[in-house]
Amino acid sequence: MEAQVVKKKSYLAEYWAYNKKEAKKNRVLCLFTLPYFVLFTTFLVAPVLIAIYLGFTYFNIIEPPQYIGWQNYIAMMTADDIFIIALKNTLLFALITGPVGYLLCLGFAWMVNELTPKVRAFMTLIFYAPVLANVWIIWKIIFASDQYGLINGFLIRWGFITAPIQWFENTNYMPSIVILVLLWSSLGTGFLTLIAGLQNVDRSLYEAAAVDGISNRWQELWYVTLPYIRPHLLLAAILSITSSFGIGGQITALIGYPSQDYILQTIILHVEDFATTRFEMGYACAMATLLFILMVGSNKLAQKFLMKVGR
Amino acid sequence: MAKRGKRLNRSRGGDIVMFCILAFFACFMALPMIFAIGSSFKPWSELFTFPPTLLPRRWTLNNYIDLFQVMSSSWVPFTRYFFNTVFITVIGTAGHIIVSSLCAYPLALYRFPGSKFMLAVVRLALMFNPTVLAIPTYFILSSMKLVDTYWAILFPAFGGALGLYLMSSFMGQIPTSIVEAARIDGAGHWRVFRTIVMPQVKSAWLTLIIFQVQALWNMGVGSTNTGNVVYSEQLKTITAVLQNITQGGIARQGIGAAITVLMLSVPIAVFIITQSNIIETMATSGLKD
Image (cartoon, rainbow over all chains, first blue to last red; front, side):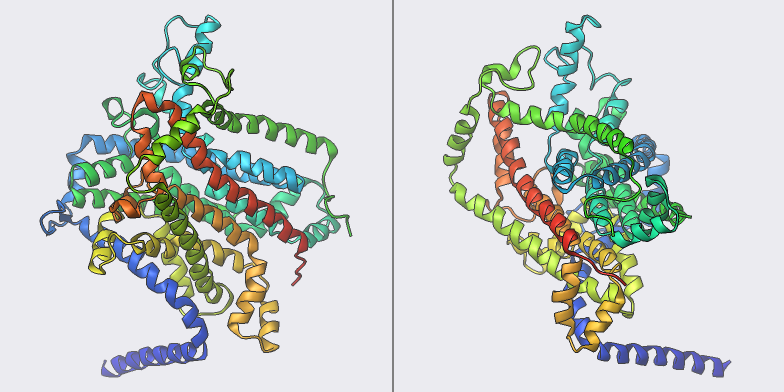
């Protein structure tokens, strides 16, 4: 027994000695990582850890946090009806806008990449334009509930309806409009990352593939391009998951907060509500942690799928 | 060797079909933008016509003139807000790119102890909701006495997660043989990083510039996590101020449209400059493993 302990210790000591030696050998490389490491740990990792801890406390920002164990999580599941709506909506939006938005990103990035350089730059701008600035006000004008709204205006003029439709108040239309607008603005960070990745693909690979018998653009995409840009596909998947689980601000910009009967409440909106207006920071952090776990889980799933690409 | 610009495995019919699909969706994507720009040139009376028009019938610059009048009547000189925004955007973008590329270099190209762990942490950090991080970040900033300084915005911007992940996934595609060759020839790490690695991943950091400029430039638009750490009027950005102006209600609708276009113009300019450079890089790179 004792011998085992001693052995364990020496393993550890050896491990540290090895790391020390490596670090000494690569002193310059260590210096390279240092500034980012310090900033990242202080301003991102530390806040995340504090937030996860706060999820287990009652914290109203004024008094110091009190540890209450799992009570926030229990309250979330049993006592908060709106949270259940928010959870359902978040999953629904993520399930639709996540994969569809991701495929749109990939599809458009690939098609845009086929164009000649000048046209490509122009097209990239057009497709990225919805994300470049907050132009939600445009959709508000298009779907405005009075007769000044673009769609209502045309529908009345062509005689389909006589009274304007209340797009943002009618619970039948709201979810589909929101999803439409979300898809419209989904060609964001992931889209640009994929374009940059596609432009980095080594041209000689295509020539080699053509010699090896790849005969059309679909085969080329599946067997050459996608496997080569796999790291970027993984990154785009993470970005797509963050944005599709993080839907909230867009809904507020479109239809205001809160939506009719909280029918479009999402977890993010619920978190923001509790963090910034009700000052129940502990509860907000608990919800954010749960959302985080959901996102990590779906990212694992997405990675599994992406590993099969090109096989 | 195929001629540059002409690609293998492409049928003419397929090209045409694809272009039509793209053009159709491009119209759909661009329509609201055109509407936004058109609205900013509409006279007040036309903003509420029925049915609304895409472009103004009578073009006018009144919205912009009104906007500049409102701007010039603020008690902190407007140039100050403008300086703040430019300063934060430029320093925040440059700092993030330098710091995260420096860190990505050893993680992606060398067997560096703990590199896998570090990348996993970065990946996780990308997924945490920023709203609840506002309060912990505020605690940390205030314990370092950084609240209400430029650094309260800049330091968190430097340490963002996206840059490292993006840079390391692009650097991972550089053939290690070329880096090794340079090392054997006696180039130091700094030199390899500057003259070999960074030019190879130009498209990555040009893309990162867009993300970072966009995030910092639009900061203050409905963002809770950075709006709270700076509250002196002298340190506020142009975005926050312009947002206050639009909250004046219906009489300010015209100014609001002008502001939307004004806010759009800078990210679009940066976007055009960086995107045209991405294309140049790819024409000159011919690296083979």
